[in-house]
Amino acid sequence: MASLSFNPARIPHKRISKTASFSKPSEIPFHFSPKPSNKHVKPLHFQSNIRTKLPVSTQEEVETGNEDYEEDDPTAEMIYLDPETDPDSIVEWELDFCSRPILDARRKKIWELVVCDDSLSLQFTKYFPNNVINSITLKDAIVSISEDLGVPLPERIRFFRSQMQTIITKACKEIGIKPIPSKRVVHITTSMA
Image 1 (cartoon, rainbow, N blue to C red):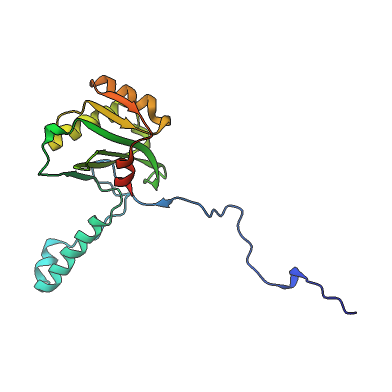
Image 2: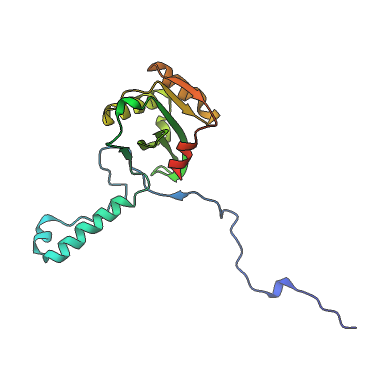
């Protein structure tokens, strides 16, 4: 009877590098500093003297292209308050503060703050670099949400990540808000989806 053998040395294939990673987080430029930097990738902007020489239809396409770039930014701040909702009726917020698999210019993960209320009338998302994550930053962010949207500070804030309990509890107590660790924060998980 004939035997069949398999010799893998004869099959050509590329070796996989030992440094290759199949689970690397996506890298998206994130700019926290309000000052422009030459190190970051910026969208192309035309000089004003060139723009005036372009036909009107080309100018509109260029302006539309820049708007699309801003809309596709995953680290863009999102602020929403339903105009039909009475701001004084929002007395409890749900909050999540966690690192995301998005890298900034320093190749460090950025952090996301997500806040909403039980009716999703208030929705807020903001991103932070990892070197400013502490209770002071969170406290300032909570106060700025209240001021920016014209909503009073909540009486209670619900959160579900036990890893963030110290930071969230300290920030809330400094501004007189009752922090409530709870697994029943269905609205925050709905708004994140």
